Structure formats: structure tokens, C-alpha cells
Length: 218
Image (cartoon, rainbow, N blue to C red; front, side, top):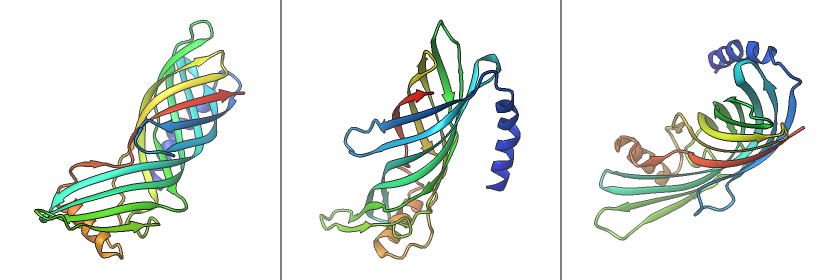
């Protein structure tokens, strides 16, 4: 983590320090595109720094409720989990775009780190092949779900800014790593993650989604 932060500061702070205009404060809200799951959203604030050659940097901090699901097939068992988990996330949007008379379309990438918060709901299920007998367990915390309360990843997307005061964007982002606790306490959770590992980590969607975001700048 220290190495990651050192590289981040060395690369991006000099760029931000050469901002060409006064920084702007922004507030925003967004929601996930996964229509079958309700209550997956984000809201927060940040700063916009405009630099040379069409680049803009937006460090942000926000609350994000995420959803993920896994399906694994190993050890003669079909395993599933559906999980919602809250995070405090700190991304930096690196935008590039061109202003056309007050309208600025742009593309961006957004590396981020997030820290798990509060209550988790993880619905774990195990069903042996050729059987209808299913075992379920509801996890209520990161530890209970066998997961480390940390997320590191990135995203990318497109957006449009109008009159320097309004942004709307769509992006895809995902965790870059599966931060799984290798020794969960519950037997169902432990068996699920064993099957997940033995299946070669196939059939997964790990905290990934399309997000729609609207921001106001001041």
C-alpha cells in the first residue's frame, strides 16, 4: 500500500500543481446499472483540477454501496453467493477532453481504493450436484463473509461537461483483486470459498458494474 501511494503521489501531484484554472468543488450522486438489484448507489464530493493539453484530474471521496455475485461449480457442488457491501472509496478520475464552446465531451480512467464500512449481507448457498437439497447461510459482516474489507481497482468511461457546472457520465469499474479471507469461521462460507478457489475462480463477477453519475460543480 505504501508503494502504491508513493507512486500515486509522484505521478499525479506534479500534474495537479500545474493546474491552469482555479479548482472547482463538485458534489455528485450515481447509481448502478444492474436493474435487478435495488439500492446500489453512490454519493460524495471532490475537486476538479484543469491541467494542460485537455487533461483534468478529479480526486473524489464517496460512499458506495456495491453488489457482487459468484457462481462456482467444483467438488461436486454448485455454489452461489449474492452480496451487498458498503465502502468508503477514494478514486481519482483522469479525464481527457476538448471544449467546444462550453460543451466538453471527455473520456476517463478512474483508479480507486475503498474501505469496507458497516453491515454486509451475503447470501451463501451450497447445493450438491444431482440433488435439490440446498444449504444456505446469511453473512452480516465482512469477516463473517470471509472477505477482507478493502477494495482496490479501477474503471473507465465517457462523460460530458456543460458550462463548467454540470457533468454526466457513465463508467464501468471493478475490483482488480479478489480480497478473500482464507479462514472464515462459518462452515458454509468456508466451503464456498474452497470451491471458488478449486474452480479456478470461474463464473465470477467481483464488485463490478456500470455506473451512471451526475455531478454539479461550483
